[in-house]
Image (tube, rainbow, N blue to C red):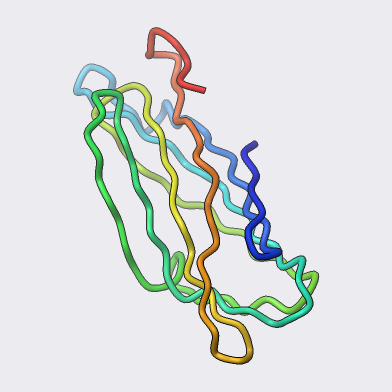
Length: 130
């Protein structure tokens, strides 16, 4: 589990290699990652957008930007959390992901929350990245 707190918002990520969706013989490896976003602050916040930086085992980088997460822009009151699962494929048996969420508070002020960097490990790589 990977965990980071920014502006009293805690983001936890747990990646999981998916052998049933992967095809190593075709250089196709797939991971799911489960994310928990928790509001430890004193104000209501809303997640507006996401940014992901995905790096494969060769160092090639792919960036993803978009509205919300899994089609939602969740609002979190103090003490509330939101969880979702998504996934990513890579052409290598390992990689790294990191990113940010753009959040806004009830006063309309936006701020950036860091997503902790996490490794995408599989049994097909020679060494674990983390």
